[in-house]
Length: 334
Ligand code: ATP
Ligand code: FE
Ligand code: MG
Image (cartoon, rainbow, N blue to C red; front, side):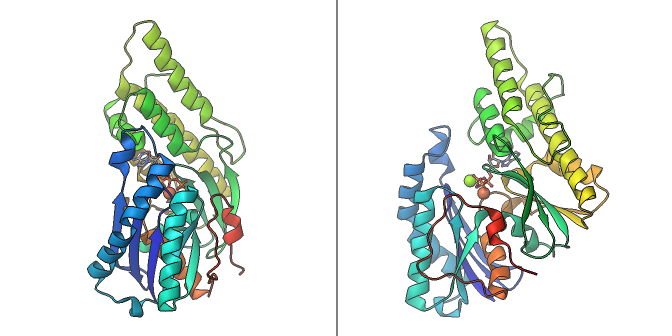
């Protein structure tokens, strides 16, 4: 199959063309991160306006890099949600226009199914598996009994892990997004600050707002007392506590559900500390997406769409964007 995929759920406009399982003919990502950095986070109105300005260029670049004609494409895939409504609309309109003009089937993809299937761009997922989804908006444990079946067995009750990283980055006055910077700083620091272990219970759920608040309070109190904090040490302490709970709960769930493999998905799967700790502590195989497919991209959407294409999961042209909707709704039967 030859699938053209569009991803525009947040501040990236991305187009990829995927041949069969893992032959990526192009993977173009136009990131607006430098613009949003000035505001310390993504400004939705600016994001959708910038998407409108660049969508045609990104599409043309992708087609010329891949050296394919629209006629050769088998299906048009697009992220239908979750994400920012205005941003999603731009990708959706582009996808529908292409599908209509070139008489191609349309495939609406759940953004997190995309993050999960980024793993399949490297090697085949072994089922049943457990997926740890860690991104800017999600922290979930997903049990996948077979291909494209999603059972959310645990999730964050408040902040997502990526969100907590970015907020900690903000109090440490780091450039947005804080996640990758904290990851780098953590390597230079030591775990010297006492922070509460978040949601350290028997459930598969997470909670990161308490940990985030503890870091923020620690910074504010230090400032008030005129004391200095050691940012590398605070980064290291925060990261180790967060990773410890993510890894412990993932390993517990993997054991309880007797899965063959653990896979990790979402922007925070780029985290070196998480990669090392989970790989070291697990006695079953752990799969991470390649670094370039961790944060938002269209290759991952194409990869999920390839599975949907195989199962003939097409959408009609009145497909609507879904700013929030459950991953479980995407599950295919056995
Ligand atoms: P969602 O996928 O839930 O809709 P999103 O698309 O905004 O959210 P992603 O693009 O998947 O999120 O991931 C971005 C997040 O990943 C940011 O919060 C960023 O700080 C975080 N991140 C990226 N690299 C790292 C890293 N090395 N360590 C920790 N966090 C990281
Ligand atoms: Fe994402
Ligand atoms: Mg993003």
